[in-house]
Length: 541
Image 1 (cartoon, helix red, strand yellow):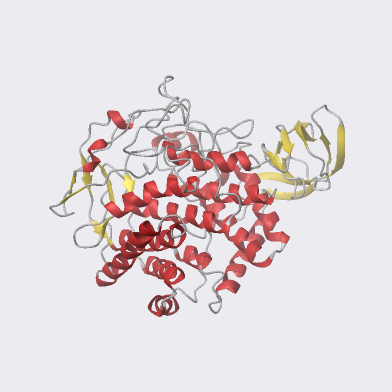
Image 2: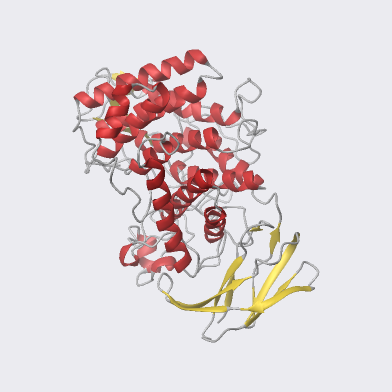
């Protein structure tokens, strides 16, 4: 059966406009584009692409980029199949930018989520007891006030390394992209003279500061002693909460984002900026004195382990942000002397919470340090070549077609490299690569599904969550509009995925089921790249 997969949200008038046709036919096929009234406004012939490895299907590419007129309700038809409806609109991504960022307020811990600010998502404050949390086994004998922060994912744990990379990406967006300094996110703090995005990020930064142990090192995470079931709203969670051991990685995460935050907050709150910079310096020094304190891989009860036994990249990243903020030679030397500084750090995916060297490289892209700019452009060229060879225009081709956990975030992070290359060079091929990669997330994929809740005709809406659990309890909501699903994962670590997806290939290793935590979770560090890319695209209009 033939299918036409499109970006179900739509396309920018000046951007690329391509779709993927699934068909048994191997010869070029006629296609037609119809507007919302059913009038044919463009025609052409498809380009056969052969068997797509990521889906196992025979596919063609349809290029209708010559059509630039705006409107809503367009459809694309070929080989007896018709696409979902979509728009052509210069303002297409502004609401996605806002919704992807509004997601974070709903993830806040320790504060009431106000119904007037998020209709349908109001709830009492969760985990008020986080003001006085003891150490778990092996973590020490002290207690800390670790209130606030964001719940990491579908559970109610709070993890420094996931929080760190999320804060970094949101602050990077604020520092480098248009339209974020006056964006209204409908927060309790709105109107306080500080941009809303910085208000939201500060909620997490303050939590990261509170995770410091008396030693100066930072606790890797804090969460329930045992796993809770689904659904469990945060304020109804009765599990005791514990601090888990400190780690070098967590300490360097604080050093990196506190340094970055100091630079950005300086304009709005000088006292807070100084506090952040002092914390960044101290954390960097503490990590240097304790370079091999690793989070235990076996710490899997009540929360994910987030283990990482190679922290060279975190040292590189923290030094980069401290150098950018202070300009001091000691941090420049740490950057230049890092074994990663001259390596190709742009692998199948650019970065994530456990691999931050590419984040450092992107941060340093405009410094003039030898080789940095060229390395970012080379990384972008690599992802662009992957994308151009892929029938679904994916800048992501995992080895042996084994898709990673959270693959959608990896697609988006690779797109961020293309976007930075566009910023550095002004070459439209990078800009167009970003836009075409976003098509995959919003419906131009083998499942004909938008992975963003509320966007497109058919979209993910049952992401793994203990409180956005409508699938289990009709009295609870689906995830908020603008929530990204993790996406295809060849590992199939959960029972639902194993039962329903065993034997599937690549793109088909996904199911929109709340119990499929390995393919369909939501997380803060996956929504951050969605927000970054949506903000980039919105800024083009």
